[in-house]
Image (cartoon, rainbow, N blue to C red; front, side, top):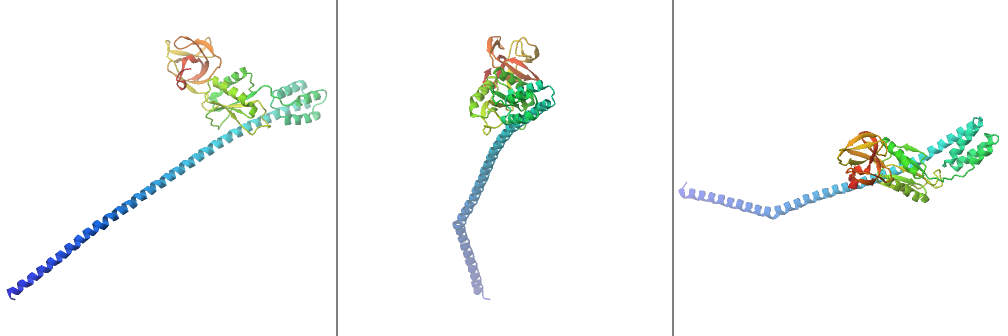
Length: 356
């Protein structure tokens, strides 16, 4: 092959290769421009979609949390309502138990009268039972109608006279309900306190399955509000915390008579913490009675914590931890399983920011 022709062929092949490379480079440049113009907006678009999905998911979780909080609040409301219903049912149950007890006592008295056993004593028991108040009129009426078939002779008129008395509660009555067995001793002190105020306390009993944050003085008639407030103030003066007068409706003209109250103590009503103040002798005597001359149950070192249960309402003279003459109250406290009395000027109560 001539050399010139061979050179022309090689030259043509080189031109074709260069043209192909130029076209490939042009396509690559086009694809780059296309990626910049289209790819970046697409990336931004998909990033926005992803961010929106995250926001929607967070909002959904917030809604679910809000719904859960709302459901929890509703449950708490239902629990409070159920607690109130349990308390009201407990009140009704207590009244029914009293009625059943009165019926049993009346039946026993009438049984003795029917057998002629100790008629005078039986009539005296009947008079005492009715005189206490609280025996419903319908129950007295029923036994008054029964009397002629059971009681004979001159005692019949006396029995009918006793049972013919209308229900009058001249002396207010207060029933005591407490939750913790350890409150029994302090509850007995409350009985003494109420009796000193000319109030009758027919019964003190322990109850269960009731959780009270505040001590309640329950009354069942609007006319007894002032009486309930007086009792609540008396308990507050005895340093029982968070006492409230509470009206319980629905018992008007039923088994519970007017001027009958119920005191329901809170779980921690008689266990407020206090600290023994420092003194020169380094301790304070826990007394058997509210008197400095009474026996010492045990010494309590300065700085020790005690549980204050109840205090007497009368202010008396005494000495504080620094030895100065002051006016104060004697308080029943518990310490290391022992119960006794301490003059309150020796107590530092953090809830009151200082000495009682």
